[in-house]
Structures are given as structure tokens and as C-alpha cells.
Image 1 (cartoon, helix red, strand yellow):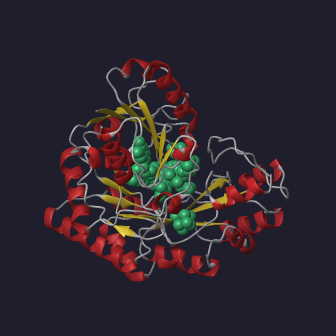
Image 2 (cartoon, helix red, strand yellow; image 1 turned 90 degrees about the horizontal axis):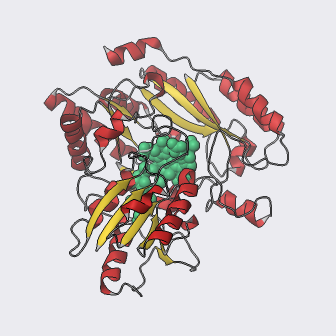
Image 3 (cartoon, helix red, strand yellow; image 1 turned 90 degrees about the vertical axis):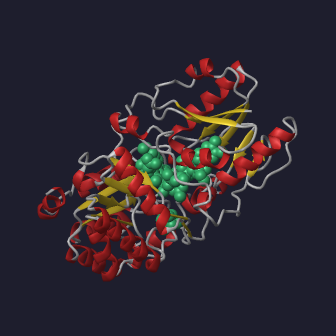
Length: 438
Ligand code: B12
Ligand code: SF4
């Protein structure tokens, strides 16, 4: 059975440099099915090879299963890709990834993909027309729910094959990790250490895709990944993509210590990042000191709002006083601090925005990123807005820089005025950046 894992092109018109997401998830899925007898699986990267959703028609000969990765930002292209496949071949279409539930595929693999996709292929090999059901896989027309089953052993499918994912070509095409204080400086690659997040923020899909329980790769897996990337691809910046690396503070310290030992043993020099942010209440002096020694120079946190009322509505259990203390602690450990904030959350008023503005300008962030709230299908707040009739069910592109939703208490001018008032507050400590590149 010939299986093609498809990474669709992203935003039309944007270059990879502007809009580059590395298909790490497909690396995990590929590993999970590679050794399956009777299956030949490879990746078709439409973003890298500039293949339009219609252009895929010339790549379908002999392909039995087309399995597409769906995110909110590429959902329109996913849909066009699926239509092309249907017009030009009789391949079975499978959708996977965070927005799999929105695609009109024959089967949607919802949530973590490895085990479910492998089981689906096994069942298709036995009976192509009517494969036995698999938990987490939904046939067209079936009501979809995010599954609760997640694999415990993250190491089981082996190290990620960054060659198969064409990391070097991604780097040539402009792929970069998001280290705000040092953009474009080092060759970068992403990796995962943990999956899952115990929190339940109303706007976030993370725990729906990867569950609420934290599951971990071993220290050995992490250091072997870093060593391989350093030696084979010249990577000097490692971006940990986890939702919540520091939730288990003890484990996060063990990971830092393992990285420090690797550096001491090999003489390697590289930096570490956690672009999605770390949970602020889990940071203590010992962890921050270890992170600094392991290679972190910038800590990203996501308070999201300076208004207690908005934080309650977001179901974000965040103590703003604690954030202020941790900003100081990060600085005392010689690292820059970046804050992610959101505006336009349902129920917000100009007074909430003013509290957030004050929180940003009165505290010592080295940079703040402000996004505009957009409801992500499947998240608790999306379902709430849908039920109240405030939004419709039509899938829309998720773009945090555009006003795609406007809550009753705010005008467009309020939102744009807030963004302007917060302004570009980048002021990284030069000394720490110089230390880094010395
Ligand atoms: C890391 C990350 C990023 C990184 C991406 C880094 C990279 N890879 O290059 C960055 C910071 C760039 C990013 C950006 C954005 N992200 Co983001 N991101 C994540 C995060 C934390 C992890 C994603 C990841 O790489 N996981 C690692 C791999 C192993 O998992 P995976 O890709 O999900 O793949 C697994 C499954 O999804 C599935 N799978 C995936 N593809 C396929 C295909 C098939 C065929 C099958 C069977 C299975 C399958 O199996 C895989 C293995 O289990 C998730 C949250 C989460 N926990 O999922 C949010 C998340 C995916 N991001 C989200 C969003 C909204 C965005 C942005 C739109 C935000 C923005 N600022 O505009 C942008 C979009 C990208 C862009 N450039 O415009 C949403 C997605 C919602 C949606 N439905 O699309 C999530 C769920 C978080 C949230 N807010 O709820 N993101
Ligand atoms: S926003 Fe962060 S802390 Fe909240 S549920 Fe999502 S991953 Fe967890």
C-alpha cells in the first residue's frame, strides 16, 4: 500500500521565510508506520516544493492513501488538496493534525496521530472498503470528539528522521526558530521533550490534541536528538516546542542537567529556546539558573492579560503578582523575558484593555507580543460562542494579527488603539545578547 503524507502549502502568497512551520508532527507519524509490512510511506512537502493544492494531481499515480496534515492556518489549502485528490484519483483521503476535525476527508485522525494512524492503515490493509474502527479515527459523517487515549511511551517510535523531513532545505528556505532577541543568528531545529498540559485555558487547543497528562521523552532521547542535529545538520539553536516543559519542575531540571552534561562532555556550544512559553508559576531560582547554564537566554511567558476579570473568563489560573516577581527572577539569572498577550477576548471591555496596557508598560518585559483573539474550532470558548450564536461554524483561517472576531463591548478602534498604545516595546539587554554570540 503506497501512502503519501502530505504537508500542504501554507498561506498563499507568503514565502516560506515569512510563514515557515516545520512538519515535525509528520516525522512522528512517518516513524510510526515505516516498519508496517505491506506499507510504503513517504512525505510530499508541498510547502517546500511549492506544489499548489491543484498541482498535487500530477503526484498521485499509484498512491493508495493520501494523508494530509491540517492546521487552522492551512485549512483552505487542505480542503482544495482533498478536492484535487478526489477529482484525479481514487486514493483514500485521511486528515490528521490539530484541525483534522474540520477537513472533509474519508477518515479524520483526531489528536495524537501515531498509534491511531498505524491502526487505521493495518485495518485498511485487511479491508479497504470497511476497515474496523479505531479509537481517535472518525469516518466521514461520523460525529467527531477529541479522544482521550494517548501513548505513554514517547520514545517508542525512535528518533525523528530530520533528513526525511528535509531540515537542511527548510533552513535554506528561511526556516528559523523564534528567538526574539537573536533572530536569524543560528541554524535552528525544533524538537519535543514533553506532550500534554494539565491546564484548561478556554482559548487553547493544545490539551485537546495532546491530552491533559504530561508525558515525556527520556533524557537520553533528548540528548541523542540534540547530538544528531548538532553533528549532522550544524544546528546551534534548539527550539523545544512543548506546551508546558516546566510543569514538572523536577523533570525540567533533569533535562537541563542532561544538556549541561552533554555540553561539558562534547564541548558543544548552542542555545536553547521555548518559543511557546513556560508556565510562570513553575519557575524557581534553581530551574532558571540551570536553564541559563543549559543555553537559554530568553524566557517566554504568556500572561495573556493584565485584567483579573479577563483571566477568569479565560480560565487562566494566573497570579499577576507572581508574574512580576518572576520577571525579576529571570533578569537576576541573566536572561531576557518576553510576554505574550492577547486582546479582544469575549466579554472584554475597554477597561480590561487598559489594565492590560498598564500591566505591560509598568513591568519590566524586554519584549511583548500582542495577538488578537480568534476562536479556534474545538476549544471551549469556540463552542461557547457557537452555542450562543455569536459565531457560525464556518471554518476560518486562524490569524492572530487580524480582527476575525469582535466581542460586544469593544470596537475595532478599541483593539487597534490598544495595539498602538502598547507599541513595539522591544528593549533587550544588549549585554546578554553579546554574551550569547561571543
Ligand atoms: C510548536 C507550535 C507552534 C510553532 C510551530 C513550530 C514548528 N513546528 O515549526 C509556532 C510557534 C511557529 C506556531 C505557530 C502557530 N500556531 Co502553533 N502550536 C504549536 C504547538 C505548541 C505544538 C505543535 C507541534 O509541533 N507539536 C509537535 C508534533 C509532534 O505534534 P503535531 O504537529 O500536532 O502532530 C501530531 C498530531 O497533530 C498528528 N498529526 C499531525 N499531522 C498529521 C497528519 C496526519 C496524516 C496524521 C495521521 C496525523 C497528524 O500526529 C502528530 C503526532 O502525534 C501546538 C499545541 C499542541 N500541543 O498541539 C500549537 C498549535 C498547533 N498552534 C496553534 C496556532 C493557532 C498557531 C498559529 C496560528 C498562531 C499564530 N501566532 O498565528 C501559528 C500558525 C503557524 C504560522 N506560522 O502561522 C493552534 C492550532 C489550532 C489549529 N487548529 O490549527 C495550537 C493547537 C495551539 C493553540 N493555540 O490551541 N505553533
Ligand atoms: S494556554 Fe498553555 S497553559 Fe493554557 S491550556 Fe494551553 S498549553 Fe496549557
